[in-house]
Length: 446
Ligand SMILES: Cc1ncc(COP(=O)(O)O)c(C=O)c1O
Image 1: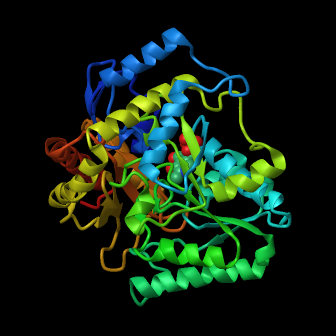
Image 2: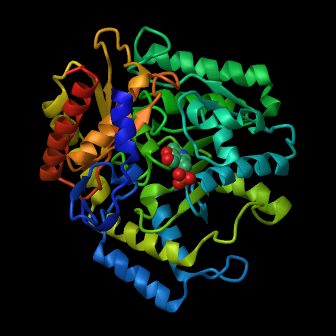
């Protein structure tokens, strides 16, 4: 019955988007949706921001793009300065790409190029984590612990080792947060030793896991401990902040929350351009750049649209507004009230196992049994059902399936634009409650 229902819902052609305004999106029938997940955690400023639109128009009237081997540009210089102001030292070099996956590809290549340049050419292996997502191109997918998205390509992916997810709600060992962190740091170190440190290029992780885990913040001391492990073995640390960064979690860099731990290479995208333009970036330190520039003269990565001028102009305006209006601080201050609204609306439902997150990035994990944390039968496709039912109720949220082990586990991600406030949180929570209860009734769990 549920399959028939979902099949039915999915086969109804998607609503046709018409226009957006602030936290709202309208379809061609005039139906209004509150954008409770900013698309997939993208729309940091909301929709149709007049200043961003104006900046885009102005840039288009000048020139769309100055190709990177011929020109640099004011928008690129301004955007670079804004990112550097937000990040502080250790992020002296920035390259721009067309999205998150391209940024990850380049981060992996920069790690390899660095080791090549310092004469450690055997360092070509990557280590990543279970329940992680770093993108859909073959390289980015190779380092993603995301079974559903990998399965058809498994034999063509580059070799990568996977260590355990750092998930406090579903810890791989008991004994509390410190015990879990120690276990995970030790597991990473053992994997490096097993591969031979001289063969390992980098460890890649999301400080707050997005699409693969359903908003899973790393334990407090985890980033520092894995930083130390990587340093002991000359392994580079790549932080994937494509989804959780650019202010989404209440700090411009998600890792700032963790005592300011600095990766060697960081990837950003989504909130950087706020959804107005396709844009991703890789930023890295002088320490990484110097040998590369000395030996090779330049990064051996890039594309036709690398550093696209229009994209940089749009993102520079997005970042100017984020800074001017104190939106990162706003997101930090409001995070607990977003969670409180959701808690008040659905926290008492037996099927709600965990509501967690940071800033405007929250996951609601659904369970069949609260005590054992047993997930629902994956054939019920609960996360998709919730997405469909909440959409009917006028709310956009983001479904995660397979969050527990790649197959089981359902989470709904709530990630509103940074401009959202208390009244939007109440509306999101109310519509989420409506859609969730209908979805649970569909599967006879409410
Ligand atoms: C953490 C993370 N890294 C990388 C990507 C890939 O980004 P894109 O879809 O822009 O290629 C995503 C996309 O959801 C992501 O969440």
